[in-house]
Amino acid sequence: MYPLVRNRLFKTDAETAHDAVIKWLKRFGRLPLLPRLVRTLYTVPDTNLKQELWGLTFENPVGLAAGMDKTGDESLLGWQAFGLGFLETGGFTLKGQPGNEKPRMHRIVADEAIINRMGFNNPGAEKAAQTLAYVKPRLRIPLFINVGKGKDTAIENAPKEYADIVEILWLCGDGFVLNVSSPNTLGLRALQGKDFLRAVVQAVQDRTKRLPLGRHREPKPILVKVAPDLTDPELDDVLLVLTELRVSGVIATNTTIGREGLSVPTDKAWGLSGPPLFPKSLRMVRYIHVKAPELPIIGCGGIRSLETAYQMRCAGARLLQLYTGLVYHGPRLVPTINRGLSCQL
Ligand SMILES: Cc1cc2nc3c(=O)[nH]c(=O)nc-3n(C[C@H](O)[C@H](O)[C@H](O)COP(=O)(O)O)c2cc1C
Image 1: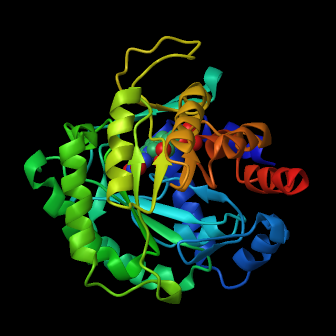
Image 2 (image 1 turned 60 degrees about the horizontal axis):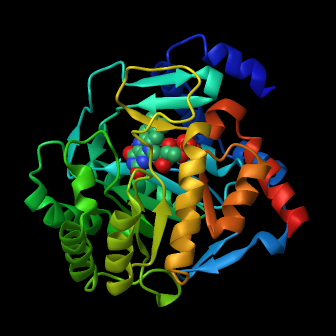
């Protein structure tokens, strides 16, 4: 079924197809019974897949990566129906912004990859909080909220801005992801430097100390999402800060600015996702797991099959996230991975 849908979708440009899918998911998510029925069909009932982490229950390890839903609307209810264990929405900035000019999302079909330079197109934290106030109570799986700095925000003001956004969205999410790794906002990746990262994490931790606790009265997890293009010494610095400040976990990785593994050359200096990213994200997960074994890792980047999901888990990822794999393989990828992991477990 999905190959037919895909053929149709791939006749239009990547962003138009994406918007059409999100619109459809929004309508589907609002229906009274059908999403629940679909969810039973897509769910793999195996308690071995279940994990308790950060006071949250993950029925299975497969989640939706950031950027697929950028508004926090009812399309999240649609995604929930496809048997995912958790969702991530955003990235949200403090003020709404249109993102970079179009075209800004492009498929590289030969490599099952995508390159994008979306640039945090989003409605802003206040508007997202209003939308999520309706959606969040209808979600039965954990929701993470991805946070980034605005296009015009000076890097010195970023720590306060991350703290402001997290505070505005605090009641709407089960956990937060400090995104310091998108390649499409000028200066954002500099926040991975030791001093800036410490300032961002500390600002968020100081602010959230006074805010209500999450489920089971545990503190809501705050994670940091890293770029696959960090050198080992740079990653060592990041890990030093994360362990020193007892950050809840790490997402490895965001898109890459490297072009290794692409069979077709491209002149677009945008963020690359999908299979060409996989060797880098896998290596990074393995590296983090060895250097900071106590730090929970969400593995993301190029997962497109049971085999790649299994490799990510063996490398040390507790949870997994999908984006580009869903575009090329459709939502069946979720139960395919879960069923396979269930057999291997
Ligand atoms: C169009 C697009 C938009 C994205 N937007 C975000 C974002 O806003 N925040 C973020 O942290 N990651 C964002 N990502 C990165 C994904 O969450 C993920 O880290 C990356 O695509 C690698 O996973 P994949 O190979 O499964 O796609 C985006 C990716 C794509 C393709």
